Length: 236
Image 1 (cartoon, one colour):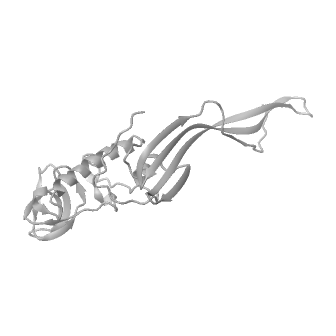
Image 2 (cartoon, helix red, strand yellow):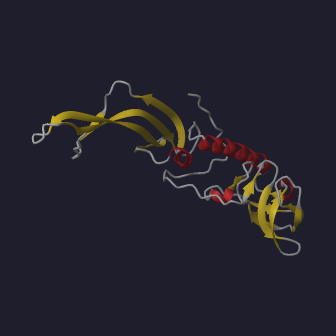
Image 3 (tube, one colour):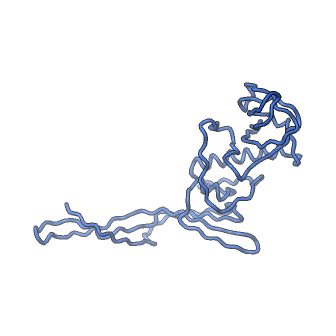
């Protein structure tokens, strides 16, 4: 299996709590855009320092107005070339896309850092869409990709927190026995048990909330089985 290692630049703290992804609006479906409104733990606020044109689209094709300077705005969405904001315009409230040159931040490298964050998130979105996982993802991103783990464990040490998630896929094997109806003498098959066999297991290890190791295994010898005896009898 080919694994990807993602840059950890601009990763913000996350908890190990598994959250359901926010349902995306039909209006927010541009695959080129990272929507920060869907990421409550990854918010960016910047100051508008220059009056700037506002566009309907991130490509800057349709102008909708002008945003005024000297206001701090929450970034709603980003591409590598523009930021979507909502604020005070020269006439009224306005929402749309503005170029990075109109913003300022305490971080002098904010334009480059936002761009790095954007490219990382686009890569993460692709991995999640493929239902895969890779080194450098957060616990929340893994949960969005693979769902709830079958088993979890956590360990706290002076070096930090480590945890392990196991995703186990089981196969069911139905076991039958041939029996005879004592009244009619007819033979019938009776379901006597269902054997659950571990088909595959993926173990994801986290260090301080970030994927640090991935292990995949596939069961071939029938070990690690669990027997469930159901009260089901049927004939043919």
